[in-house]
Length: 246
Image (tube, rainbow, N blue to C red):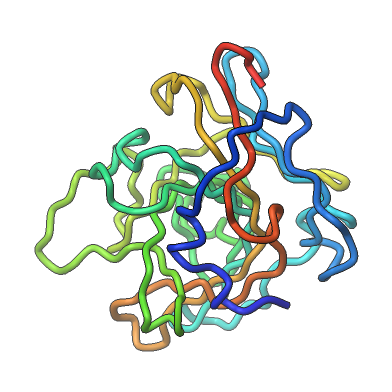
């Protein structure tokens, strides 16, 4: 398992590959737990949606965190697509950090207060089900040397946030996109309109665990472990272009 040290801000904004590969980012298998062992990461157009897809060596979504019974110290498992899109593309303050799409599971808390994913009439007990987020990632040495966190919102600060921000004091959005976690594929379908019809952007794929600070203060949510990185070096080599639709 790679440590959070591998997820550095510098690596995330490293020189991006100019080549466009419609097949996405191919990854060697056998380096981590099969549920998080990436073999292919891609973004493609399907109707009016952008489909963010990760294929793994095993069954996608088959591993979820063990419930601890409290928000403090809770674990989050995630399939993440770091992008070169500006944070303002989905409603955050511009140039706030690395905008990443994430598919997450965390049974100890619910951060989709506008949604009732399990359809039981309650909107506060669905955190263990896989669901989508936009997050803004920034470097924070308090998460370990070279570590990353979901950007915190300081007390009394009022940054620009998406309409579906769940109220947590971090740069996170709970857009409720259509998704699927079936067989070896984890997918999120993002309406093109939701990201402002970009001409092009770069992306990568990461499978990782995050952890809520046991003291519930800044940094609130750190990347704690990295299972796999599609490119191997977070160089964002995947390219999607609007004209090609791939």
